[in-house]
Structures are given as structure tokens and as C-alpha cells.
Length: 108
Image 1 (tube, one colour):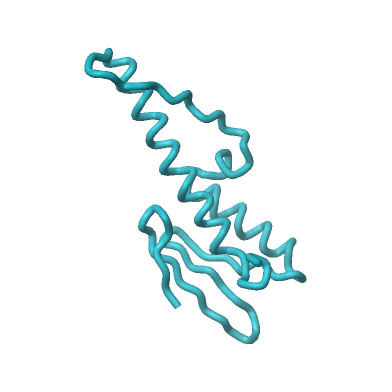
Image 2 (cartoon, rainbow, N blue to C red):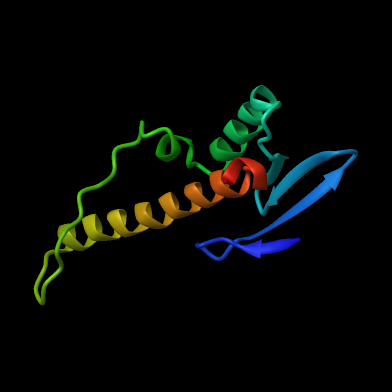
């Protein structure tokens, strides 16, 4: 089965020998079940590090402050706004990766 994440990335799910896998464009991992936390944790950590979203997922990366952009703003304000906007996209991607790496049973 394939689905699209909130950021537009396609993900796929495959089951082999009773083990469910989650595939993302940057890698794959086992889907979290009630019995495989350690293996899932190792794999999802690697995947999040690969896509530079581990700090976002663990809240160790500080979210940039949101700025209101009016009709007139400086180059610095525009840069800060772009940082904030990009962070929001990365956060959505991190949440999608985490959500889709959970088995259907765990998602409930």
C-alpha cells in the first residue's frame, strides 16, 4: 500500500514473514508493534537522523520564532520568516515519518 504524507512524500508499507516495514524516500524501518520497540527505535532514529529531523522529533532543535510579515520588512526579517516556514515543513515531515512508522494497531 502507498500513501502520501502531509508534505507530499510517498510512503509504502510491505509485510514480509509477519514483519511490517515502512518505506520512505530516504530509507525504511520496521513499523512499531507492541513487541519490537528496541528494533523500531534504532531504525526510526537512523531514518530521522538521515533526513536531518531527529532534533525536531526530539525537541532538541529550537523552533525559530514566527514573524508577522507585513507590507514592508527587512531582509533579516524575510530570512527569519523563511527559517520558520522551512522548520514548519520539516516538522510536518518528521511527524509524518513517525506516524506512518507505527503499525495500524499502535496508531489506534
